[in-house]
Image (tube, rainbow, N blue to C red; front, top):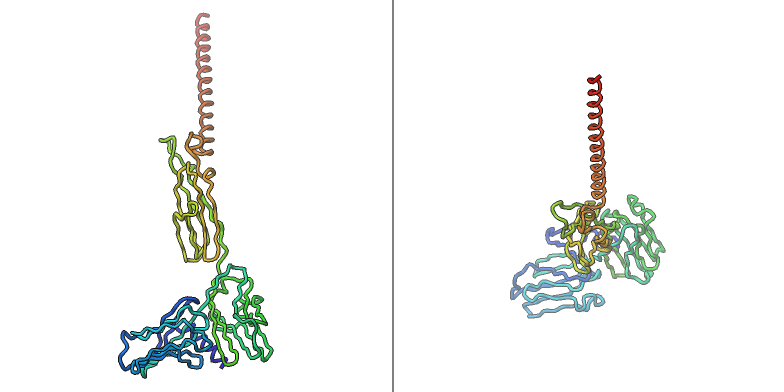
Length: 376
């Protein structure tokens, strides 16, 4: 029986779409899901039955012959209580506020025609790279007849198991090396902890639990996010126009490099001004912003993913220089260059004047000497 449960778990995640009469449905824990009959209207002589895979339990029925519509939501310890909705026109079944207890196979029988659904209810967990994550079994204590098995669906292999009856707990942490020295199985609850996570640990994990005759499945989808860098704000305000003594705005650029699955945004106070998102791997993002030089508002650039964010606040006085005078307008570097050029022009002018004076004096002296020789 325990082996059959494991095989069922694999089927739940390995089958996609519709194959024959088997359809796979995926739903996030807490959301609703509808299992459709495919009918547009029930006929007067139709009998429709919905059964859940544990003990082939009848959970809903429409019998048009007897003019009876029934929902059995108190079965199986009340796991379906106030969660089932049966469409009176089509016979489709909706399961609301799903939990992992609702995962498994559902059988629909319309008269003599049978169709099956595999429902995967998954919990979504996000963790930062290098942090630890615990996949909770929701057990406070494993009973004497309890057996559990943790399965990593990405590699189609078991990574941990416990058998209370046999007093056995085993961790298979050498699965292609990615889990080595990273798995911890709680002896009391059966919960699994993955330490020092990397992106290689992202994927689907299934807990198969068997206590007496009550089997259950619990599925997790784990996302591992890289730690975010602090975004960088730059400006090109050092450029100035020679035709104007002032400029009205400053162009800024917020950038982040080697990022994936993130959103880069500009905020004015708490109000979002603009944003750009990316799902590709390891690319560079940039987002421009134009502000007035005399703007007194607070601006910030934020880089965020699902579970974390990094913020860089804008200091307008440092990045945006006003054009009150040529020095400020053109920037300190250009101002220095202009001062040096002015000094060089001044020195050159003095040199030319001195040279001209000396040349004229030499010409006069030469003319005087020539006259003296002629008289002699």
